[in-house]
Amino acid sequence: MTFEFELQELGEGIEQADVVNVLVEEGHVIQAGQNVVELETEKAVVEVPCPEGGRVVKVHVAPGDKVSVGAAILTIETEKGGAVSEKKAAPAVEEAPAPSAEPEQPPVLEEEKPKAAPPPPPRAEEPAEEPLVTEPPPAESPKRRPAPAGPATRRLARELGVDLHQVSGSGPGGRITAEDVRAFVKKSMTAAMSGLGAAAPPPLPDFSQWGPVERQPLGAIRRKTAEHMAMAWQLVPHVTQYDAADITELEAVRKRYAVSRGDAPGKVTVTVLAVKAAMAALRAYPQFNASLDAAGGQLIFKKYYHIGVAVDTEHGLFVPVLRDVDRKSVVDLAVEIEQLAERARQRKLGLEEMKGGTFTITNLGGIGGTAFSPIVNYPEVAILGISRARKEQVVRQEQVEQRIMMPVSLSYDHRVIDGADGARFLRKICEVLSDPMQLLLEA
Image 1 (tube, rainbow, N blue to C red):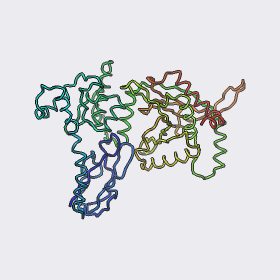
Image 2 (cartoon, rainbow, N blue to C red):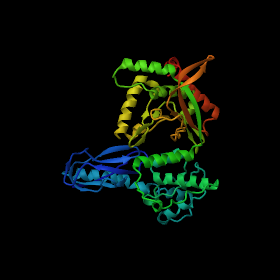
Image 3 (tube, rainbow, N blue to C red):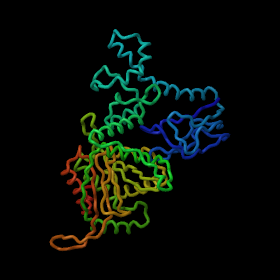
Image 4 (cartoon, rainbow, N blue to C red):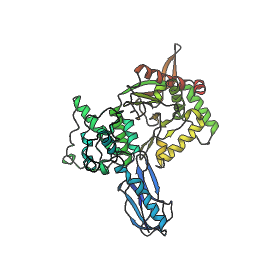
């Protein structure tokens, strides 16, 4: 028997991935559960195992290819009989309803409209029904049938405040994909900007007329970063607040502690301490630990503290998430950040390790600069930026002293956070970082 291994869903809202490496060749004999291909999706490279063992008859992909969920990866000749056919049939049972699951809803409409044609004719007319929804009824209306989309796509639409009935599906049978939702958002934002007098970007000129050029395709990491940053910038009305924390005492304590730990794992850095300071501020100002449900007209307050820490690598920017920072010690966080940063540099982070954050910290102090305005990591509502600390002459108690001052910046969603609260939140972080005892007690 032959078994065709198809790409299964890799994560929430992920419809496509780039092939980085194929780990098997035609003629190879593989074991069930063996990794057969490396795929790059969003900001991670994942090894995908094949659920069946046997001899590889055909490899359908090559490095550099783009593959979509449901695409064939390998064809395998197995030694099994009926068991293989059952495995093969399982995905078909799950996938077959996908395009048709939603179109089977019209019988509900037929019950509401007794005079309509019998069931067979409406089924043939179904593709024409979706475009007619130009003025959708209220969400609570029982007459509006669900839009054809999977759970992950519905979740993405809720996060972005998109009515799926206004989105045209490009999938089989008009099924709406995550890419359709993102394209709808981009189109809507472009239309909104045009209405405000801003024109859509003009086509690029032919740069080669002025000299040699080289075109390089955007990698999956850069492409995903660009899409997410553009979406966040378009959706969130940004405001950035600036301040400076006096970390003179904190640096003295940090350096003494570093000497006492020697070569033990978990270097206590400014980033680690900033995570604890941010947690104290989030606890004091819970609106910064929230997300805005624009469609539902609600604020979602999270009762947990998961803080993302931006990691700069040669492959791009990764933001692994530290979970439950309020329950972990400074040393625990230091060790965890080291481990996550190393996995990020090796592109071994799992997708789940970069999801679920409630607040983000990005530290450019190791590179330089005096200040910057980070972009909010949507659907979060705020992000803390840290710049390089430097010695400055500061007046304290009518005396001029040399202190170590660290510039900090806070970008936030002005729909959720007022300027006064933004200033208070950032001042809270500065106060906690300026006093090691307060950091110990509050964090």
